[in-house]
Image (cartoon, rainbow, N blue to C red):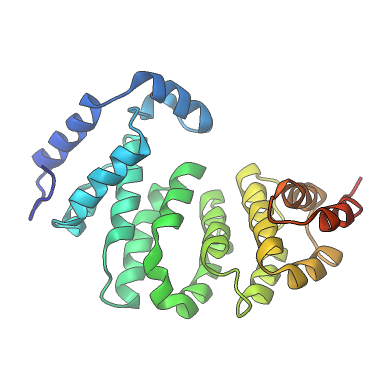
Amino acid sequence: MFTLESWSEQDYENFTEYLKSNADLKFRAFHSSLVPDTDSNSFIGIRMPFMRKLAKEISKGNAREFLDISKSEYYEQRIISAIVTGLIKTNDYDDFISLVNAFMPKINNWAVCDCFCGGLKEVKKYKKEFFEYLLKYLNSNNEWYIRFAFVMMLNYYLESEYIDEVLKRCDSVNSDKYYILMAQAWMLATAYAKQKEATHRYFLNNNLNDATFNKAIQKCIESLRVSDEDKKFLRTLKRH
């Protein structure tokens, strides 16, 4: 239905009406409560499997034209655009960067951010170049851009080749903004599970604020990938 070779404004309007016709109002109320910083009226109420299916359908047609005319009135429009962006096979690094930059202004909550990051598999083609480029986002004043940088590092750069630089970058951000703090803590807990030695050293000597550090330790303790012995030691590091 939506595998189109060209997209008109009317096509996109039809697409949005189709989303509305598939709304689940109970799910809408539930899901909007999980994203409290976003106006509940911007949620239609579509479950993720259905949105992924639509995005795959769109990506088989003229996905780039779809993105060019896509709107951001509704949460689901942003999510589907995020997934479609990730499904596009890029021609080169510059093409990849242009797609990423085009989507970034649409990130207005943690759910859109994390969905976008999870789907950007093309980054694996350009890991070295993009790792340097992530500094642009990490040094931003935009809360969501900084979270994007952390979640991208969490998803794609917790490897021995990058871990020391990832931790160094993590140490350069000292924010009390909730969604940045949570992304840092989540990334560090995952790093501890994947790159224990480097992250252990980092936990012993870092510049994190107390809230971020304690949240990272808490997430490590809650992780099934961390041993009971390590959890016992980590508890001793908590700041009071």
